[in-house]
Length: 234
Ligand SMILES: Nc1ncnc2c1ncn2[C@@H]1O[C@H](COP(=O)(O)OP(=O)(O)OP(=O)(O)O)[C@@H](O)[C@H]1O
Image 1 (cartoon, rainbow, N blue to C red):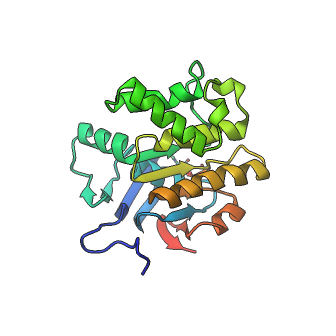
Image 2 (tube, rainbow, N blue to C red; image 1 turned 90 degrees about the vertical axis):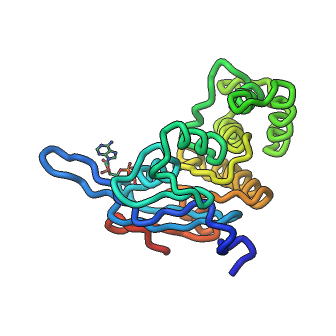
């Protein structure tokens, strides 16, 4: 057992228990998740590798409280989220979960620093304090001299590093990433992944990263896949 493994008094950062999700498909239904169980502890970096259409995004959306499962439960830091009101789910999502997508989704009219200041102000921080944290994180991501650049003035890899910094700027406990390096060349992918992995190691975050990149998957702590709607360790 590692020192970050969940214990009775320290629940896993993310736990899925018997999660089911089906979509309507014409007259029938498509069972995407059929009883998915998963635990990820603090400081763990887990790769989710599965074929297109297997349900990776669905799993990430449910884990990130963006969607509700049809059956089963999602626990974030031990809190059962199924019966919570939408407002409480939103609060947990804002404070405890960071998202990284294949495309950066940075606000194009704002600089890198401003893209990191805004989410902190939404969570109640003052602008000055938020700017200090933004500058620190950008320096950590080796983007110290890019703070006043807008997304269009950054390279693809730099944009993704800003997007990762934004995902963790409010010090969440869990990061969920859907193909975070999917549109980058292999070398840039490796750099962006290194930055994310260093953050996870340094801060004790838990991270679940959907990727088709087997090279990156091999460098994570664990690899899981989806088989007929269930989570299977590879
Ligand atoms: N809102 C929806 N309504 C109906 N079907 C959906 C919906 N969202 C996803 N699906 C279907 O559910 C299945 C799983 O989709 P999902 O996006 O989770 O897969 P994925 O593993 O992330 O795929 P990819 O690697 O291509 O992104 C697919 O067959 C998809 O067409």
